[in-house]
Image 1 (cartoon, rainbow, N blue to C red):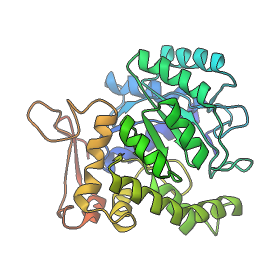
Image 2: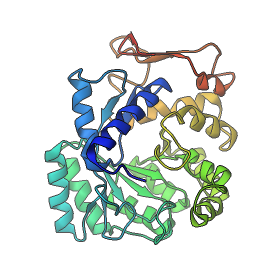
Image 3: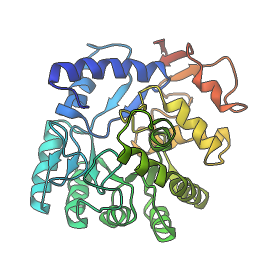
Image 4: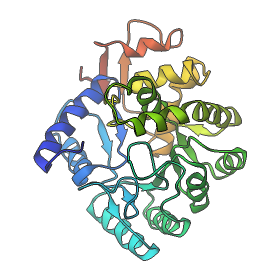
Amino acid sequence: GLAVNEIEASVLALKNLHTCLKSGVTYIRECGATYDIDITMARLEREGKISQVPEIMPSGRAYSMTGGHGDMPNFSCLVDSPDEMRHAIRQGMKNGAQTIKLMATGGVMTEDDHMFQPQLSIEEMRVAVAEAHHKGRTVSAHAEGPQGIKNAIAAGVDGVEHCFYCDDEDIEKMIEQGTHVNPTVVADWIIATKGKATLPTFQVVKAANALDDLLANLKKAWDAGVKMGLGTDAGTPFNGFEMTPVELELMVELLDRTPYQALMTSYASAEFMRIDKDYGSLETGKYADFLVLKHNPLVDIKAVQEIDKAVYKKGVRQF
């Protein structure tokens, strides 16, 4: 469940950020945070007031329709018309959101909706995209089911999170528009494989029903040339902030990628965040964010899962 109050949320957030950096992630794009807590954490990191955390591109709260995915206490901004969306996005960016997260479909975690239900309308999302793009910021949409994916692409979002039920038409349009996808395979896979004992049945059933479909569709999109990023949807059940190396393994094992293809998703993420001039590869003039591993991940992708690996951020050892 979500943290009860802002103090508890802050303590949890800091712990999660430490875990994230220790796992080897030096820069994160947040996709919806309770109490806008990521905006504050990003500022504290920039000011050097918190240490051993990744850099953060904050989104603040996600944007959802009333009764939609993410309509939980202190979590989403609820919007129910294009005008409400315009106001909410402008306010969010004034508050410090550097990237925008929309909820285009239902999902696995909420009981009264389903990933096949479209939620925010094309018109509502289009306004969000226009406002964010005026300020040079990116927009991504949580979109799992087919109609919501179509709506998000039609609205011109920069990225689709999850994208489980994309079809050939969607794939073509995403390539045309340069839309990125963040597959987050680990989030669904782990609920489907480990959830039976402790999670509500509806969550396990929804996750398990989707798994074969999402693997087939994501594989097809990747083969066709859709740009794939690296993310985990951290915070969902069993899916802690240390799971990024596991996501890389799943790309190799379940999506039939080479270790090199899997590792290159982190570069695609830097491109998506528009920070690739400074991050994403070890080149002269870029920040020295890197890991030191005992084994070669190009031979065995599990090498990245090393527990006590050395993590460097801007040339300074953090762990």
